[in-house]
Structures are given as C-alpha cells and as structure tokens.
Image (cartoon, rainbow, N blue to C red):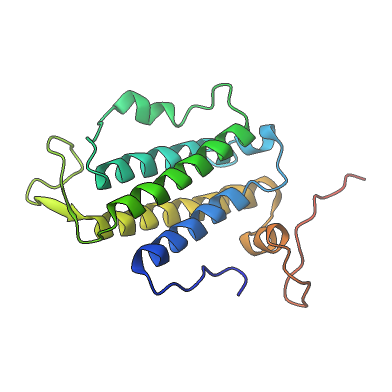
Length: 191
C-alpha cells in the first residue's frame, strides 16, 4: 500500500522498515528543490532541510554505534557542526544519509538480538543516571521517534519553502496513481 512500510513477521525487519519510512519522509521533503532552496532557512529556527538531514544522520549514527556496543562520543562541536552547511550539496547530504541508513541496517542485523542490553553512557547530561542499560529494541524505537519527529520538521520546512505537502511529494516520488483526492507536486511556473 502506498505510503506504508511493508509488513514483516521478523521484528527487526519491521522496526527497520518503519525507520526507513520516516527517513524517506525527510528525504522526500527535498524532492525537486535546488541546493539553495534546500539550504534556505524559511522559519525563525534557522533550520534548513539540508542541515536537518545532516543532524538526523549524525543522531542515527551515534545511537546505532551505541546499539552495536561501540563507545558513545559526546562531542558538542561535532553536534553543532551538523547544523552548519559548509560546502556540501543536497545530493552529498542525502547520499551520506542513505549510507548511514545502510550501515544501520547492517549493524542491527549483525547484533541480531533486540533484547541485547547496552550500557547507558555515563556523564552525558541528557542521559539518566538511574538507568543501567537500554535494549537494542529501545534504541531502535528511540531512533524511530527521533526520525519521525524530524520528518515532521521537514514537512513544515518544505511547506514554508513552496507550499508542497508530504502527501503530494510522496505521491510524486513513489509515482502513485492520480486520484481525485491528491495531485502530484509540480514546480510552480513563473508567469
């Protein structure tokens, strides 16, 4: 069914499919935009679609590294750098995000156990001191929540740029059949 992740009986595959759907929502929000449009900051927050993708890729990388029993790097400068565009194009940022997605799927399949417990890093101000560990399942659900939250941000940013909505963009990218309820996105022509 268009717009929904595939059904899987394997819980790992189902969770990965839902995270992929949220990632697609973020990337779809950039469909048809120029680098300048994607880098624009149409709201008071100063966030752009390009920097949003950089940020969400960084967040996913860190959480999945933790799930794979790698150390948590609490680097404020690297965190801040994700919100700076630099010289990267939209296509570079999207390609990096897709590489992060592929690495996530490989790492989680390698771990293979959603009940595997991972120690909560100590000394990170936003992590609880009274929790010893999280399961890989908990981490994947957290990544899904983070990605979904940012997919909503991407929807608002895109709508502020040119009025395109998530369903129009999804229908366009996924080539849904035309219907009386939905028209595909088309770039407005100047007169």
